[in-house]
Image 1 (cartoon, rainbow, N blue to C red):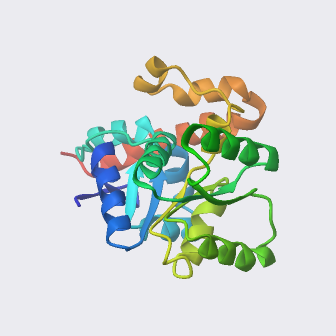
Image 2 (image 1 turned 120 degrees about the horizontal axis):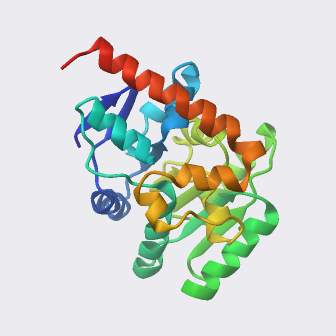
Length: 247
């Protein structure tokens, strides 16, 4: 896999289809793939958060989740093939799991959200898909019990819908214990989207890189710092690196 070095971050230059193929191969070979994604906000956080940087950069596959990362790669003359949004990847992987008989474990979100998502998936794909599930509200001392439950479920795929940097650090911290789970991935707010709790931006907004703005206008008080401040810092970092390393 070609690795692009971008603002102290590694990003694998993979398409959606290539990523799906690698996940399927790992499951067939009974190997583990630790997956994560990066967007503008996470890359900004990684500049100072050493633990987050380590948890992300040591993953087996790192996809570009945000369109801003694709633009940055082109500005810095390290072009990535395409955006592989975590929410879309999760949707494609769940369909793959249902088709091929793989089992999934859902960890995260509020109890009512994850329960609703389980019901949606069972109605759509059948009860054999879900190996187990749990909400994302727990204390650190409960983690070992949760990890054991995931292992005992015999799931091939684990999706963790908890905010950053907790999900990245959780998966990095427990990836050895979870080595029998062939694919582990942090999916942020994806459970909320698929459970119908949060509306996703129209396709045209996704294509022009304005999905963040749609999310911002839904919850401006909660999202203003993440997007307005975070995006501004990201733009600064991109052009700082551009000026330091002229073509």
